[in-house]
Image (cartoon, rainbow, N blue to C red; front, side, top):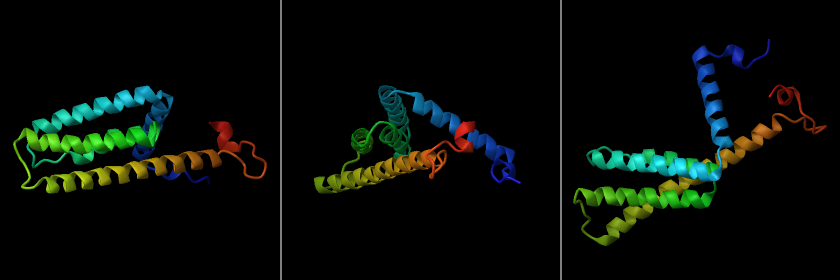
Length: 154
């Protein structure tokens, strides 16, 4: 008996297929479309963030557009989105009138948030590279460099 989808629950199979469709959709998009989608997501998250109280943090949601653009475009855009996400946090603070006692505290908090987002950018890029590598070697026979059965079925 072949292991794989046979041992999974139907809901798990549905989730896997949905993720495959999402990844296939993102793969088919151009870099400019990914950037546009990421900017749109960023603006939506920013607007929601500014409409909610400061006690409800939306920092983790900024990871979606940041990691999306880093994975499917390049690390430079990931860096830009990391800076923009940290700047959005500062704007959210200033929109409600909250300030720090010393500017150094604000700069430190900004730097920590940028470092957090940049670590996630690095992880997203590394994960994407590993996924593409695993995807390619799982479809090619290492001895003959010809497609194996999985490569033929896809």
